[in-house]
Length: 180
Image (spheres, rainbow, N blue to C red):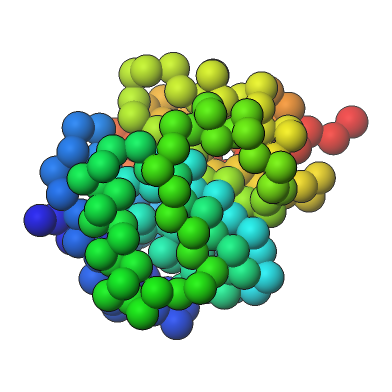
């Protein structure tokens, strides 16, 4: 089993375990620290969606930092089983909802709206382009989008990159809705 730790908030220093799985790349500690510096350290009351939950690093981190609701979507059964084990080991934080679902199907069916969406899909499969047209419907007007990709992103649909960083081969971005 692989491990990653939660870097901030109530669950800081807790270790998450996850299996090897094709395309699974947990967001490194340093990148998560940067992201939460950009957002502000606390997410009190926020509703977050981790659309490709994987290791759970982003979703569990959001819950640790006070998010009121974190929906974590994962399609792979083994990876979802590890997320459920980590949820239990963390004392089953009530803000977290784990779902086995396909990202596109979830976006097409949900009526929920979110303050923050995490997108860290498998690379080289065109996921970001497929998801972009569906993001406006689920993100609140003042919401934010966090995306990781194998290349730099200027925009996704109506969303424009406002902060960007690179760690190894990973480009990470904070995007906000474009305003005229």
